[in-house]
Image 1 (tube, rainbow, N blue to C red):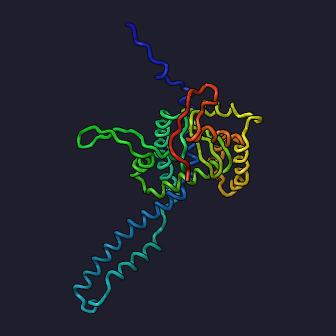
Image 2 (cartoon, one colour; image 1 turned 60 degrees about the vertical axis):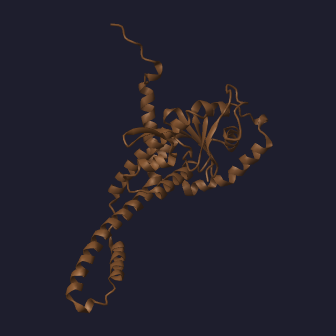
Image 3 (tube, rainbow, N blue to C red; image 1 turned 90 degrees about the vertical axis):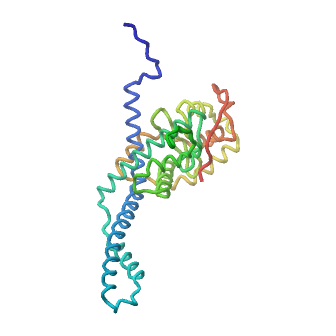
Length: 304
């Protein structure tokens, strides 16, 4: 019985699948180091809030019983007493165990990075490059949601999708921002190219915009960088990057797993290469001068 041939685009290369899985695991290891202090603080905050609420509720019930049977308590400021009880509990509450924090961190990071990669892929279907702010492309993503039994299209922000994906965890919006900003600072303490799954890359430098694109786009951009063709303005921007690179001493990855992942995923990018890349990858420029490009579009906005 004849069979319809399977399109090439639907056939997965086992080596490519394995490479994507490995890169995802390494990316998560880097994110875990950035996320662990934030998640630990969030879990402690949640533990204190939950425990204090329960115990304060019990204390309130006990005070109400005492107040009903003792005239001496008529002038007692119950609200102040309850506030004192809460503050005392906050100081006395034991923090969550480290293993619990690490397990929760791994779960948070896996959901966060998978969602982030998915929306990054969607962004790069419509643009050759995406400019990231704290590693997050601030664009609207088209999704289909089911509202009151009807399918409706919506365009939430990437940050909104990340927040929704992480809603079942202890972290909040501020925690999400802190994790992404820390990961940004650690990854790009020096000019680098970071390999991502699905043949995507990020290129960035200290306190500069980060650009996400396909590997082929990056290679075409860098292939056109010639020492004798670099404008003076580009050289000036490159020179401004150099003094900031020393901050790597305070933003370096420290855990063995994270440092190994950094070595595997990252390759150096010279300040001149980064400055030249930013010339063509920024939204106000085009890639018309790059061989093989018919045009260029960039999405998102500069990092803050």
